[in-house]
Image (tube, rainbow, N blue to C red; front, side, top):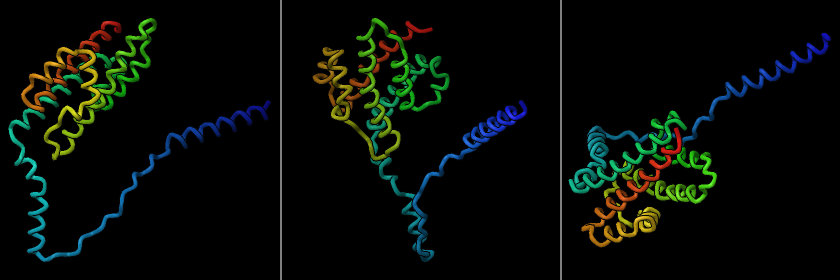
Amino acid sequence: MITKIKKIRKRMAKVQKRFYEVKLKKKPKPKYNSIEYAVPLTPQENSEKLIEFTAEGNNWIRTRTSSVNQHVGAFLSIIMLLELKLDNLLVDFDPKIQRKTFGGKIRVFKDFLNEFQFDQFDEMKTDYLALLRPLNELLKVRNDFAHDITVTNVSLVDFVQTSAYVEREEPHKYEMLVEDAPTEQDKVLILVSIFCLSASVEIAKLRLLVK
């Protein structure tokens, strides 16, 4: 009996040791390139370099017109609205959804669709999965605008999946935006707005099916 107790204690000790090893295991440090230090310059050269580095990239702000800023702002506002729609649907599925990035919310939406029991509504699931490609396309453009100051405009060429979705689901509206929108930037905003409205309706339908 005593021997059995000793064996059990030994096993428990091993399990505890493994548990703490896993728990205390640190994440590997990211690997960076070595820092290379500059050759010392004269005070005059340092002043010139300081001015150069400080001003670097400022020209991209100066060359942005109010029209460009309006289009970029309008595009990002549409994306923020779409994020809110996803938040409202997914907040019970993932209580941390509001803290996630747009890309993170799209991934949670995909997981939600895979988890959701559509049962006899297989076609309905296919329709919802069809939203993912346009959403990821919007994500890419959104990230370009948000993280690259040199990106000042986009065209319909950047929205192949979104265009295909809108043309299939809203053919009359798609035809109107292609024919009537005065500029390429206007076409993009109208296209994204139509998609956002269509996606909002589909998301609202899903909200009717969950508590």
